[in-house]
Length: 317
Image 1 (cartoon, rainbow, N blue to C red):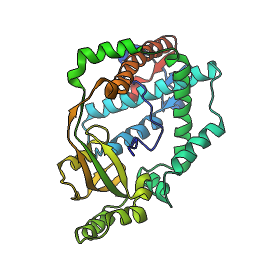
Image 2: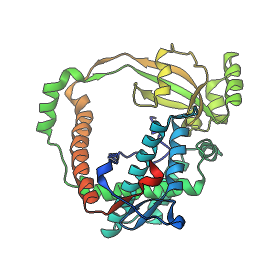
Image 3: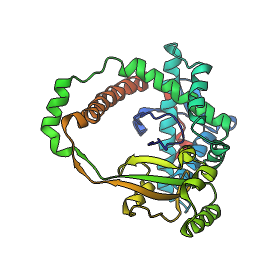
């Protein structure tokens, strides 16, 4: 089964519009007591400490361990600030529209995710990602709320006719190939030395599936570590190492933001052209996403335009 490996959270796409200097007022005459306020969004504060935490999260996620030049650091700060501004505006709009997420909805998603894990796999996964269970639960609640808001206020009513799908396929059929796919098993642990020891055991002939069931912290561990079939781009970039492996071979230890992985390829399907029925769902998702993203961009811009966004340049730049 193909998993979404973005923070173990609900898959959803929210278009991020980066902050530019013209989208907010400056906060002047900040007193010493309030000099940690980086921005005000309709009166809601964003603290510099929140931005700094976001920057550290980005550095950890993308493994930016070397010192970062000042310009790049400023870009990261503004990226984080932009996302925080948008999140606040979306939360405020949800409140205005009386859209909310119930505890039962949150618990349902949490149960769905935790049921995929065995033993303390989820606990170990969160430890690797340096996030507490309460923080993880809060992120799930936030993403559910934003997803519900966008579904009701933006995506409702957007459809693509079968005629449009066929027209698009006819004009672009040469683009629709079933790419090379591999079926791979994986073992994921949180400590590099543990991964290296497991790799040595595998090289000596130890059973990959059994170790995955017993040790792996990933959700598919209980299913022998089976990721199912996937092609390039469906998984994090680091997973692409599997496409260079022959059937039955294992990879060396690969580090990702989710831990330390070892892969084994067990099947392979070569590339071929797709017919319309095979391509239909892919095309529908593409055209729907294009329309949804365009409408979301306009909708979010309208919300930002009518919001009072005040930026404290003194502590950000």
